[in-house]
Amino acid sequence: MNKILLAKFFAAFSSLSAGIAIVATRFVISDTDPETMAVLRFGIGALCLTPFLIVGFIRNPIAKADWPKVILLGILFFGIFAFLFNAALTYTTAAHGAIGLATSPIITLVLAWIFGRENMTKPKIFCVIMALLGVIVAVSDSFVEGSVGEDLLFGDILMLLAALTVSVYSIFAKPYIVKYGGIYFTSIIMAIGVLSLIVVFQLVGEPIQLPNFSPVNWWIILFLGVVGAAIQFASYMWALGWISPSTVGISLTLAPISAFIFAWPILGEAKSYQAIIGLILVVSAIVIMNKQPH
Image (cartoon, rainbow, N blue to C red; front, side, top):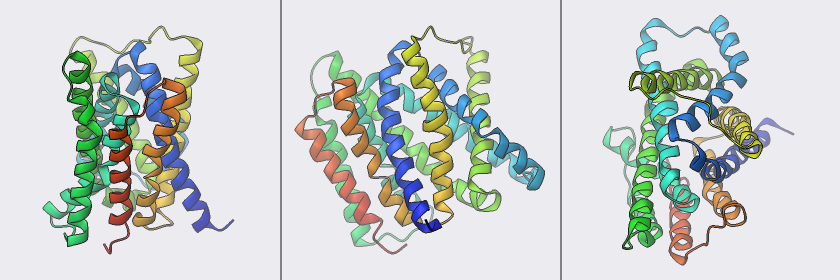
């Protein structure tokens, strides 16, 4: 198997596991809190990536001038994003969460244009509008009276904020990923993000404590840490080194699709026609956008 084909496989695997991670998180999150969930998942992931961290420090240590930005990126992605992602799934459904998170490539496009790193063409504007309509349609069933609708809408907003943090990270982390290597850089910022969560919640008087999970939930946490954190992000970063961002971007559409597929039998989530139409619009926008010249 050549490396290009292998990279496409890893990109697809990463996206599929991201969708499954959404469902798995939704399954467990009711028995814990967002910060503990983030520390457990990415703490296990960071431990799995420790060998890459050690080898990287020996071969290519982080330059002193880069440390402030590297720390900020770690806090942003594996601290703030991880917390928002889990907090969102405390309130909204896996289907809604998957669609909200899938807007990240579209948000990245808009931010890249604002910062002068991407030209905005008519097809790209069309994609932005299509994705926006997709999100509006998908979350339209959140606009119902009562606490259920309010919770769904609040969770949807949190997931869009999580997607925003992913987009900001994607823009500003790229030079460091190129400079230090994707897997090594991921091992560093994952450890930084986990430590930031532990320190922050210790300072606010809510220290991270091990939850009283059932054996099934602990197996899910282990899956999320090993597969949904370490292997997922390592696969994604390795794929970026061999195939174009556009090719990887198209594979990202598998995440909301896999979340939709697994949420029904595992979580018993009924699929509304609004969510299905919204998914189609968002996925189509991502595919069309990634076929445009960059």
